Structures are given as structure tokens and as C-alpha cells.
Image 1: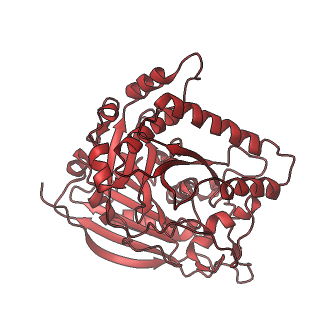
Image 2: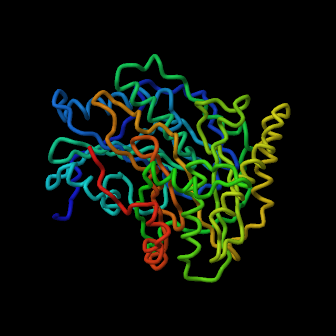
Image 3: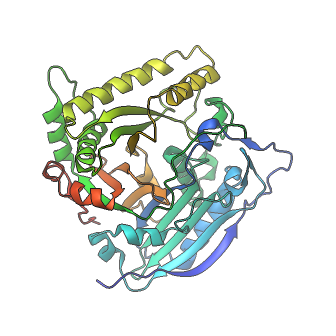
Length: 427
């Protein structure tokens, strides 16, 4: 196959269709928001051609509905100012592009992770203070299309991105009246940030020594893995726990250095404390558990037991809902700060689950996506993103590792017993 080339054919700024009131106070970011790395949370959505809708109609629908939904999501059209966001209607970036030498079906036969980057309207530089939202609509030779969506991680985790995406899609279908207003007050949970706070962060952005590869776990293989782990002393693990444990073992085994390892696993807090957080809460509303001291001999069963223990501990931390939200948030953030993790001592690998996030329901009026993928941009080293396969039962793992570690990881016989490396996407 020839090298696929993306040509930019248009770029414009999309502003809210109604002016945001000037007397709105700036949006206060939480302490969790400001410690996020300077990256975008991104999603790729692929759609086959609808013969009843032209490319011009599609672009018009995307742009007009984006302008309309930004009236409800106005901070996304604003700018970061210190530890706040000003809803000043500077707008979002909308890019149109085309691929003239490849059909969508050809691309999906063997999705190229490097080519995916060309479907985003951002480069490999750290995310700036503006724009906070960018979209790229790329049309393939056959008429199929890809939507690349980027939202600053300072404002949005994966669930936040999905909340916006579903609202935008509903607006494009003419169902804007059904869209609930989002809640941007992330300081409902975590303490408000201030500019005096300095949290040390490992600078990973912009490194070019890493590579990202896709591994797909079919539903039958996940069931086989879950059955392998379960026993009288280990409760049957979830899909995510079983896949996470296998990937973690293979990551540790493939490591080419002797530093201690730490498994970092974010968990969405919205369903865990519904009395405080609404389903439409926007922000970085997660808590990350840490498993330290991963060594070359790490055992999948022991890792599952540890993950189950961490899940129980998290439930204990948030179960006292009689306390104020700030009390719970401060307690959670205190757990993160007081952890024994140290960047100088440990190598951290993050496994974040996007499973059960309904990206496949993003229908703009020309059918549901035939394939979705998600990550952050620029890529961070040592990160795995788990996302549902289209059937909702399998899991696609997008693993980013240093090149030398990936060479060993992708050859793991234990991994390949359960996962297929970058299989074709069937449409």
C-alpha cells in the first residue's frame, strides 16, 4: 500500500452561536486539573459513507452543530489563564482534510498508528493555553470519514470527552433539546488550584523514543483469561482487571532496566459518588491507585488480587458520603500525594480504561462509527489505553512503550496467547 497522505483543505475558528455572557466568572480549575500533563485527550471516530449526505452537507452539519453546542460547553471555546479558564468565546479549531490515495476499508485492514496522528489537528508539541478544543474531519477517497477530536486534558478526562461528544452528536441530529447542561465545576470534588502550588511532574511530552501498538483481546480470550485467574481465594476478575494484569506482567518482563516499577490505574469517580458528582460533570474526576514494586517475576494472579484490594480501598475512601465533597476530595488527593511513588526511584506504567465509555454511540446523523480509538496527544511514554471493541465484549489495548521495551513486549508468548497484534477492523 502506498504511504497515505493527508491534505488539509480548510481550517476555521468555530465560535459559540450565541455570545457567552460577559459577567460569567472565570472557571476555577481544581488541583487535579492543573497537575495533568500538557496533552490533549483525543478520540478517533470512523464512519462509512452515507450516500444520502454529501461531503459538503456533512461538514456544514458538523460546524453548525459544533457552534450550537459550544453555547452550553462555552469553557471549551475559552482560554486558560493561570489556574482558571476564561469563557471569552475565542472559539474552537475546525479542520477539514482529505486522503486521496486510500479508501477507509483499506486503512482499516491494518490500522497504522503513525498515520492516525495525521487525523488530528494537533502536532507533537505540548498543548497550549488555547485552543482547548480542536476537531479534524478527514474524508477518504471512498467517501468514508474520520473525526479526530481533541480536548485539553487540563479540562477533560475521557468521560468528559464522551459527554461532549454525545451532546455534539445529538445536536447534529437535531436533538439539542435533549442535551443536559454540563457541570464544569470540578472543584466540587478536589480543592481549587492556586498558582502557589507546585507539583513535580515528570516531563514526558515530546519524547520520540516511544512507539504505540494495538493489541486486541477477543471476548472468548478474555473469558479464558478470567477463568485462568479465578480460584477459591481470588474472586472472578473483571474484564479490565484480567487484561490489565496480563499487560502489567508483560510490561515488567519486557523492561530493559532494573528500576522498580509502579502500576498507575485511574478510576472514574462519577458513578462511585453520585451524590456529589453528576453524570454530566466535566473535569478530571478520577482517582488513581498505585501498585508498587513490580518485578520481573510479577504474577498475574497476585496482580489481580492487588487490583481488587485497591478497588476495595477506593470504595472505603469514598463511602462516607455524609462528609462534604471537599472533605472526600481532600482525602483522595491526600492519598495521591502521600503515596510512596517517587519518579526518581520508580518507572511508572499507566493503564487507563475507557471501557464502557459509549464512544460507539456517537451518531451525527449518518450512522454509528464503525471503529473508534482513543489516547492522548502528544503520546506519553509508558501508557496503555483500554477501549471496548465494537461488540462491547472484547478490548483493544493501545500500548505505548520505549522502542527497545516494545520489541520484547510484542514477542511475549503469554501476551500473544490472548491478544492479536493489530488485526483488521471489519466493517
